Amino acid sequence: MTERRSYTVDLIAGDGIGLEVVPAATRVVDALAARHGFGVSWREREWGSEYFFAHGRMMPVDGIERLSDGDAVLLGAVGHPELPDHETLWGLLIPIRREFVQYVNLRPVRILPGVVSPLRDVSQLDIVVVRENVEGEYSAIGGRAYRGGAEEFAVQEAVFTRGGIARVARFAAELALARGGGLTSATKSNGIIHSMPFWDEVVASVVGEYDGVGLRSVLIDALAAALVLRPGDFDVIVASNLFGDILSDLIAALAGSIGIAPSANINPPREHPSMFEPIHGSAPDIAGRGVANPVGQFWSASMMLEHLGERAAAAGLMDAVEDVMRAGTRTRDLGGSAGTEEFTSAVLSTINT
Image (tube, helix red, strand yellow):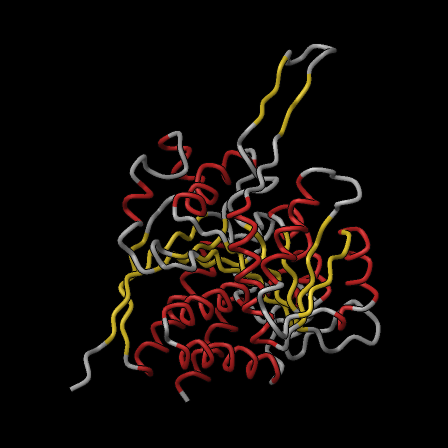
């Protein structure tokens, strides 16, 4: 008798439309679990901005410890109009990424059925951004002095380590090798004279160990322009924290909507849980109206299933999403009329057929 596989996943719906798309994703995953012979135990964490208003922090003091024995974290969105973004992000999302050493932020982008790219004559796009996720430009090192005065200044330090660059470059090189060998590194070594030449040197050294991977290093401004003009020239892009963040949003927009884009915050050695989230925000302007697009959350859940080893279920989820979209059911941001519930029900019906 085959033992039933079981996983513990922490749910953080967070804020805004996260409270709508995360429950939709759990329904879809539960349907796939029943079909593919595994179980998911969901641990709901009611953390986020409402928790902050009640307790003065985005999650409990022992929040990281509570998550540490789980297999994965599925996150919806964080952000509230009455809270500064640095409060919400540095109070929840970033501590999870850093405490669990989720040093790869993986962001695949492709044009899904029925979605029209804003780029003329572009119908095919398939790019993966490998973003360094725990150091780089997004450090907490620095500060401000003489607040409010004419001489006020701010200092923000970027932190690049040889080990940090090497491990994300290695992940990107292995992914590029599996996908055909094309790898682009985003840099700005002509203007940022210390960290970016260091980035270039370490990336080139690591990628040089991989026969069959062709590396090109492209200045970030030229790269942004080239992605708009010739997106088909790119496959895997490796980038620092800031550059990867910006480029992945740009590419998602080129694919038709930021609402469909997923991401995975991965701890490749699997010493800690990894976290999966759509890249869209909490969208307070449409929250509670039932019109949120759940595709980014579904795709993130598919990446979670892939990470957990449930590859058939992961593929089945995206097959169902694409079949539904191909048949003409799309949310309003994609030119359709379906709400969150209608789209989710269509995906569930496809899975259960």
